[in-house]
Length: 296
Length: 310
Image 1 (tube, rainbow over the protein chains, first blue to last red):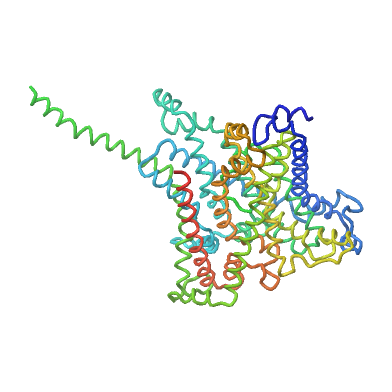
Image 2 (image 1 turned 180 degrees about the vertical axis):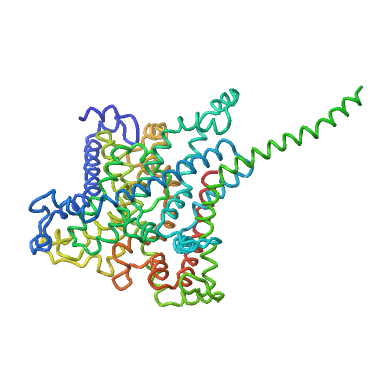
């Protein structure tokens, strides 16, 4: 175990420092600090899981305990039924599919055009997008709601359709810039040799760019999944039809009337898909999330 | 001879130019055609609401329809409202607490994570986990942890220590810091990654040089590591202020703005005015006020960023 730090050559502390026992001790203190951080990260989720299995009487008892008396998997099933997780999951996937098409096809094409084709004025557009991304969002929700419930010129109410939510995802500037940056990094010689062989611009996009951009597509896919899965405000405003409710929306609207243990278990269930996706795609998420707007 | 060639060149040139110009124009418009859907949604979803919101704030509204031009009356109403100052102060408190909790701990975590060699990837993934939890589920869970009922985690802990249970989220003085704790739990992972990537860009030679000059561990931390992170930290802090100033869904889910408006923010008030009280005009006036405040901060942010990049 301790061998590893004796060969450490990067960072603030190197193998030279670890010859001193006080530094060696502080190294193990740092490990302890990290373990503590992991506990802080995991504790709320664990608490939701444990308190979710408590009976009501047990939950409100005068001598509460951390652990539930029994973990019955039937409860997990019952709450899933109560959450109507099946239809809600299908709705979430419909939302995800539309947003995915919007962000990958529209966003990818836009990123490609701005990176490679560079029509006149695209530099200006790029600057404009950077500005727009930084604009405060305090004036977004209500005017967008006004726009979608009575669309200018055609006067159609788009509530209870997927269009407002799908369209909103097309305007995700961050992902478009992610695409642009990625395409900027592809060597020009690929494109030039394809052009010499008589490939059209669209052909270059389909035959060279798309196969090369699998990593960025998978990254954006994970982002789209997370944002659609977590989104409850959008569906809350635009999907009034109970049959169209997504999982997050069901959690928001129905769990208010539930008991606290039920609520916890429901929150835990909604968290499971996110964790599974993260477990599979942690590289994509952590590699590219750095420049996302930060909060917290 | 010379004259002839000149004439020939002249007579051919305009024709060629026109042809290539046509091709060029066709190409340009085709390229813009690819950008068109994106530009359309950019205008529709980003610029349209800003202008529409500002215009609406100048009108009297019935439902979501604009009825009558009233100038700056809505602004007067909103700012003279007794709750306005309290809400503004609350919002500032959110920012204050989020800076207190959200700047140093992720920094410490990133520095430590950068030093550790055992189980590094595992620590990184587990500490990042909260960042991918759905915000709503996280808010619900934290709401339960801070619950005033005897089953909330903190109350269970208090009882285990033999202390009387507390009101937590329903305590006017605690509600904002507690909501910020939940926000920080959700957000620190991204901040940590930000610092981590800045840490990894520090050249090893700097450390070696200062070590040879006899700088101890702490000295190196404060003369090499922290100064190198300075720009990242400053940008993060401004970004954080802008982000937290717009907080609205956490208090909406966790307290609904209560108790006694102790946790309302400008964003939440604006939301409630529009969707609960149907005073869209006032909601938009309030939105415009916070928009302008934030716009100033954003301009400052850009200026600072530019200065740092130069």
